[in-house]
Image 1 (spheres, rainbow, N blue to C red):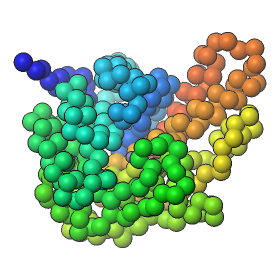
Image 2: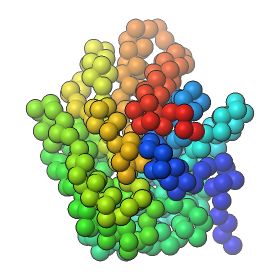
Image 3: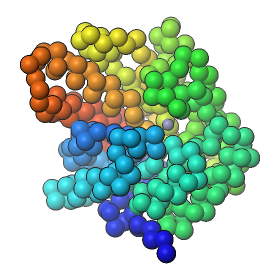
Length: 328
Ligand SMILES: [Zn+2]
């Protein structure tokens, strides 16, 4: 008989509770992708210092970095570390961009506290059918489900994004239909952000075009009290691009989402914002810098320590911007 690991046994918090709290108290839960131990440690450091709720995320495409068993146990150990230090902040473990029912089922069975099923590349009807099947399975185990309507086209498969991608804004009518017909717990919408390293379709002009707050407001009026999610919200600070290029890298200038745009969302229906690229770029920049400055180095501890310290600062800054600091 199949056994299912009930996520609360690992210390993970229910996504619905995390997001309902954020909705009623006007903040956003930071949701951090991690693929290295430095990222996971830095997220834990930031949670402890800022007393912020948070969500840990891994996408199936990142199982090459950590196998699913490792992810669950490492996240559990990180939470244990918080509790031993007297920090009771709630932390969830979320599957980011599950593409199939099977990927989501596996994450539920291994103990993730929530899963995303990304059917945004399908027709609306197919997306509804796929998402409903995941909801029916996951809800048996009290696991919450995130869906997506509207696509950050072309960029989902690549952390680098592409230059030709077109942004498809979420249609509020489709979002309402999707929410009602799937019983999904939260919804990722497309309102002007993109995955990867360029947050604008006009990145050659180097300006961010802004978020479509009107779409968020319309969905909120049609489906009150329903939590929304934004992906692709990294700020991509110029200093890390400069650092990479100074130390023999070759990366084009990037356009991220400015802090001011995200600060405005704290009292909107947006309750979860995903941060991926802002964890990758500084790690690469610092590795290049430390290796270039210490050509004799053979021990990776030196740059790994600096990465952890830098990421902690970045993650703490997100908690301030999202108004989640002190809410744990
Ligand atoms: Zn995403």
